[in-house]
Image (cartoon, rainbow, N blue to C red; front, side):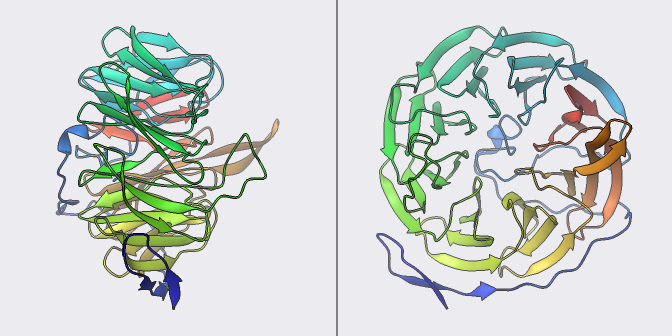
Length: 413
């Protein structure tokens, strides 16, 4: 029996499940009835930030796309790749371009409304709350007017304990912006002024966005420290008080916490680079179960319908929320470079794949956007992509937004 020690709580044992799998195959009709994904105490955040909401659930409470889609519009950024999952609010689509900055498009027409230049923009997805767009770059957190793109404030972390916020998506709850980075700290900023409310020092970097529920901020750490590449700090999973930043509990883990967590119905789910999926009581930090998934680049893509959906380099795994036993696996997908590659809406999982295809120019990356029955894993449809998609799609009002070609944001219905 594996043993994990919990700070401020008793030691707990965690059974290690080695689940079997069933491969989902072939097209399937849309499910006749769609159950409710889960209880959502913060529904107003849905769709307005990466991974759908502040819980990191990956579930968009909106109409899905049950039939083979077609392109409504394409918007060219002209170079590079689109590195962030779009956020959707107020009839607009917001996304980041590593070389240009932040774009705002009309969700129906794809026409550009404004763009905000930021030279050091990286791969973080923006978050929208109360008409304000929050975006992080390598060294700065920006607040932009959602209607005009005009800067309202900026918070620089270049000279602070946290010197690289670019890999973390901002999360906004109750007028407060939460963001982490690689230099062993998490920040809470006032959403109106940008003033620091609190700063929490942690052991290890925090390159992925936190999840928020139950008045707590949840995140894990890894060994990344760009100023000291030889550093090997202990890795842990944290729950902090959302108002004060004080530690509620800390759970040491044997490996890097390799992706953002998800909190659903009082349980927090996260993965480590030891290829382990954890289910932990969100209030106490006690491990309920842990499951050996296997495969590189694990990420909790979504949690819904009594299932935890985990992406790996070899496919999409559906794991029972209560037991940690694997229900099925969809293996016809390669998401090796993706994080949170899946999104759910209306009982359907949407997951992009990458694959190597030969042309006269040599090997090129291409793949498909798959639509799967969320309960069975069976394929409903697939749409060809002309690039390697490194981020999850966003869904609103029966439209899917993602990069369907290199340098093009597309709307599919």
